[in-house]
Amino acid sequence: MERTRLAILFLFSISLLSVSKAKDEATKTALYIVEVEKPEGIQLEAFYLKTLSAVLGSVEAAKEALIYSYKYAIYGFAAQLTQKQALEISKQPGVLGVTISKIYKLLPRPGGPSLAGLS
Image 1 (cartoon, rainbow, N blue to C red):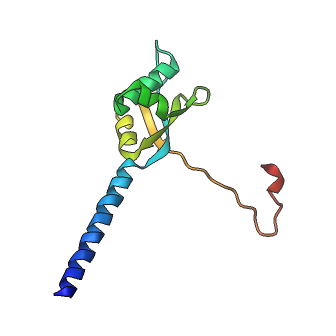
Image 2: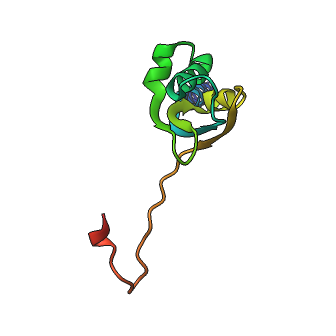
Image 3: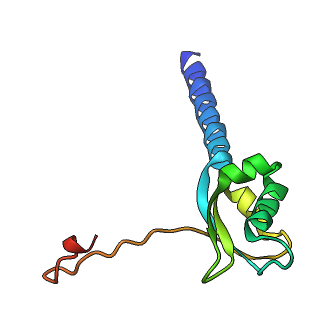
């Protein structure tokens, strides 16, 4: 009888951990790069905030999520978003693509020149 209780308690604990992990994944944010078409008749930042607020629910939330505005090589912005929000932004009018931002580090070759002085 005691073994059965322990087994049930163990399984219950595992299910709680699974629910907690799924909840964490849904609220976990990452930096996404959102590329857009050049907006006509509206300032860039206003367009970016409009696009973000359509998904985030308010201009205040959009301002908080907006990290950087691109305006030279591409039109777009970087924003802190959940995976679900990034998917929703990708469906907005004028959005060309949404990509998660990644940092790549170059490692020196063994026996090659050092990169220590380049940072």
